[in-house]
Length: 308
Ligand code: BDR
Ligand code: CA
Image 1: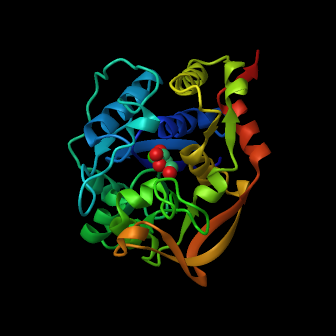
Image 2: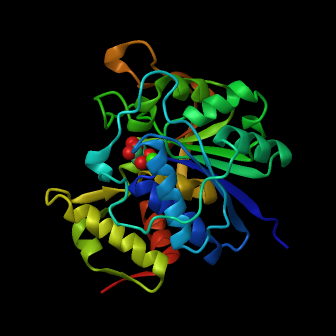
């Protein structure tokens, strides 16, 4: 029998985070040995309390309120998060969900991650979809825990491409550049799914208008996307940032990668959060190409999507 593959998502939901979480929840449809074991939350797209509420609400919608949600950082290592309400909406989700009846567990994100990773070394796959504050705090409090992950995939950075917050920086790295640098330059092997590949996987307004799904989770995804497009008539494409990172963690063959040493700018204010390649050999596997067609097929499969 295949051993189960355990997954923990660190996230700041967020429209695209929400879709990534829902992907993980339905993944056992196509691979029964994949098991989402818990979620840790971090401020970023929205305030921490809202990110946590959204994570709980998504789990409840999918009937998985049994899964633990542990709250993490409400602030970056220095300063404050600049929330992204313009993109994600005031609540962080473009579709209203009932107020969750469940609550976050008592353990903090750092305590939860330390416990899970150290209890089962080499067993848990960690996927980071928000600012890297929780992971950096984990490294400080439990120096050996993070490297006990079976794998780490981070959505963040803009390696040799323009950023999406400033000309140099991507949102997750910009939100906590110090934490991003601690994690990315730590020497711990990880995969970086940066903007260059995320921009290659998107869905257009017309395609979304014509989507339907045979499953409740799939219908929620369609509504999230439809409402996101309807918020602004100028929106023509939705790029699947966090969903791609989630997919890469569970299906590594989706991308091509190159091994680099990367650091994140923490002092030059004009270039804050910029990802800089300092060597063409290193522990960071940076995605540099993606099989967009395979990703689209995967999405249709997971969410039981068809065109009207
Ligand atoms: C990243 O920033 C957030 O707005 C998204 O959720 C994603 O994690 C893309 O730059
Ligand atoms: Ca995110």
